[in-house]
Image (tube, rainbow, N blue to C red; front, side, top):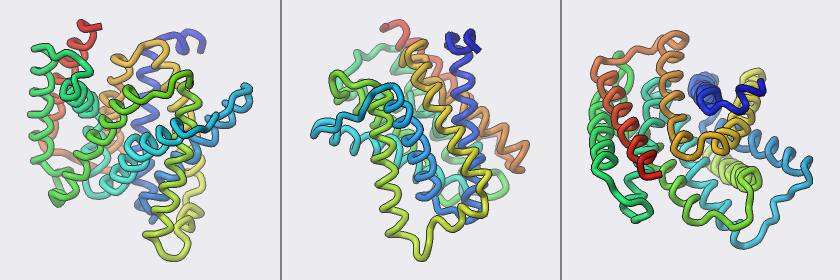
Length: 296
């Protein structure tokens, strides 16, 4: 266990596996009638509560002030609430594997936004990687989800907004990270803020008791809270051991887990073009990662 805790590749695989499990869990939850906002709430509240408890147990606190409040609200919206709402709303229409591919595009959009804002100097390899990745994204988008039931273009667009929102969050956390604040402190506050947003969204969009369907899948709720809490604990350890460039490859592992679990356990199937697009996205990701490593 100690060797795994200090291994970048081991932490990457574990983190990607945990993120990948969130995809089939989300499909099972929505199939059981759980609203997307409520399932996203389960993840943010569960992770936020666990991280906050760990923070307090180690003598820490949120240390809320105006600067951190702004940070919590923005990060909660673009990194957690919006992408998770889109994720769990899209999965029933696009499939677990197809939606998982969207995570692989986040590093590409992140690098593109960084170049646009001049946070990173462009290189030919990085620009070429973005180009290849975007071509792959277009190929994937044209296949519109599972082979047996192509999704409406609006759901494909919703799926593509997931990596865009995540990339905006990645850039924002870089430019507005409150000085002197630790990652656990900021993650706990952001997740709890996201939980509040999602609770308001669920209450305003669902009649009756939106939490009622959770009673039908208690084991799934417990499993999701355990997985999401462990995922963020491993996430921060990976950031410390492997750095941000290595960290960006989590989506690649999660997409592979999503595709495999979708086919083996949920009966999903995808067209050859979807696999071709996924390969192109992977090639683009490798190119942009190499460009970032060279720059570092």
